[in-house]
Length: 295
Image (tube, rainbow, N blue to C red; front, top):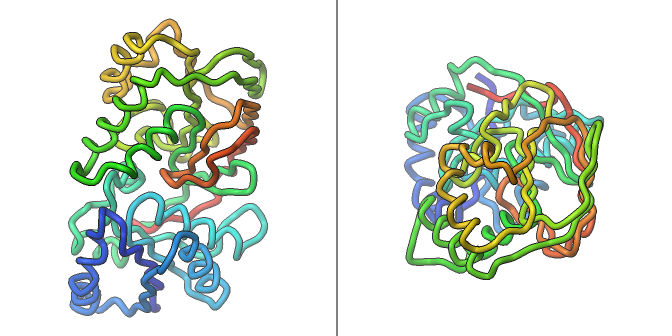
């Protein structure tokens, strides 16, 4: 087996990844998987490391962390390719909080089992997504969802998906709303919105906001809803854990290949990572079969 590049975000899982470094090294050595490991030092560092690894010939680049770590690695791989695809194969060692993409792909959270998949798992090809100039693999959103992400960053005493639930409750009590124009392949909407969530995968932060999404169908799934009362949002929130919210008469759920959102100033995230707090336009597209994933 050729050496793999490991890009590890020490903060992932609230420093879970940092605590796992020695165990990860020992496991890779025990499995006879040659590797070169870089521990990232700041936001965005993973993009540069992954890009350099792809450009220097590493065939597999492994994101050791959460969904935002995967996002940085994939962006580096895409920049190295420079043609709407990615250079090399993505490997995933889930060390984050939600690990949504790993869940979707069936990659185990057990460290040894995840490492074994790097060697023995059959690669699969999935779609890659882009919003403006940023790539993503699992999910992106404007409005309520990234606002919840920002709120979750303030919470330190609660971990896991419960942290996102607490953050969602806090944000809902502020009764947020935006005004937007949304255009997709064959229609459009103009009016108030509380969120627009775009999914390549079905789950984000433990919530099934785009429950019918498939990572290899060549389509973007997206969901949006108009502004509504706090009570209505609180009643809708529990349904997002199973995806039943898409049956609500006020909720619109569709598929498209392109999506354009013009909106009041809002945060925008990709795979749980806030890329701007002041987005006014988001242009989405799907790049079918553009990413190869190990395992």
